[in-house]
Amino acid sequence: MIMSMEDRITELEIQLVHTQRVCEQLNEIVTELSLDAQRREREMKRLADQLKDLKNKATERGGDLEDERPPHY
Image 1 (cartoon, rainbow, N blue to C red):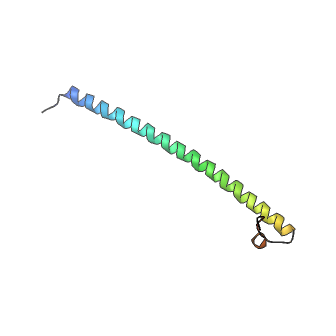
Image 2 (cartoon, rainbow, N blue to C red):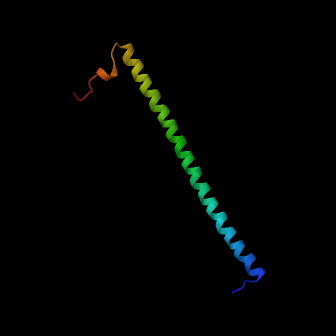
C-alpha cells in the first residue's frame, strides 16, 4: 500500500509527538535521579562530618573509637 504524502506527514507528526513525550519522561527521570543523588551526597557529607567530629572528641579524651566498647556491653 502506497501512502499519500499527507498520510506520511501525519504519521511522522504522530511519531514526533510520541518521541517528544518519551524525551520529557526521560528528562523527568534524570532530574529526579539527580536530585536524589544530591540528597545522598549531602547526607554522606553530613555523616562523614559527624564521624570526623566523633573521632576528634575521642582523640581529645585520649581514646580511640575502635577501642571503645559499645554502650550495650
